[in-house]
Image (tube, rainbow, N blue to C red; front, side):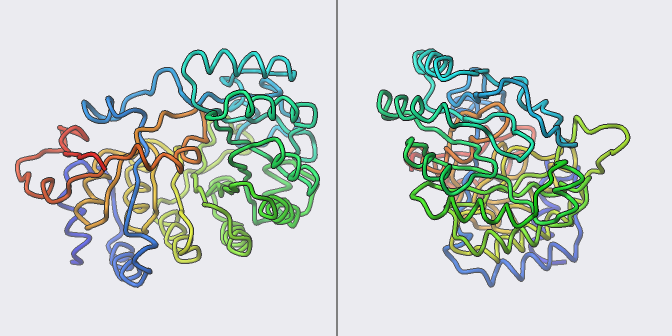
Length: 376
């Protein structure tokens, strides 16, 4: 039995998972070959420090990072995994004046930033054009207010306008299989357009953070490795991985839950392909046993950050000797918190690993509250 598998088996909170012994042994060998700086530190993004220190991870309550949609709940693409349902709980701001009002209200309520997004047209473009002067006005009026924008497929001119508006981070999904573009997204554009959009954005000074949705092709991994190769050619600020959660998929095109083992293998491939940039696991992934397994594989694969970790994941990272930090970042409604949290290092707390290991009587029922932390 490998040392890592023995460690896994010794963590009570991870007993609900079923881990592949051969895969764990492979991770242990591959992790040892990674450049030390690539995977030494892991940052766990949790809703607030108060919730982290007192209990299991709780709901974040009123968000300091609201999600705002310039189209309200409307999206013309109606992708099979979403059907525009992800937009419904977001704050609508359908006009530039409405966006200005929303931001003022949110700042007054304590917001520190926002995810700005919207439904796509039939070309997978979010039509931000009329909103750019207002975005610039917001950034000038509230200079500490950060904006992460879901750009979709931006042209070179649009990328430049996004940069000029003062947006802090630009996010877009990178798809690597034409069948996925056509069948899941219902999009009549070549897969090469996703690389073109990424190239336009990385030519600017924007912090560009592409996402790969693992299992996007109805729960199968199909174009993920091609997407990874695409991203590696353009040196973004970070990569966020999420795992498909097709709650709104149509009955005639159901999604399977991706194999945790296959997801884990892809995590390790992503880590090795991008040793010089942060690779993060975002908050979207299947619940239950799959989440426990996926989170453990993410730690063993050397990912740099995990949003909303499962019980036992922080303990696993500490016992594997990784430098563990906790960022008390509030979450947005659906995504974006892990992107904005990249700049929150000054607020992070460092797990006192030596003290943690000495706590021989600790049990999983204590949850994250049993892990001592000290100010960074």
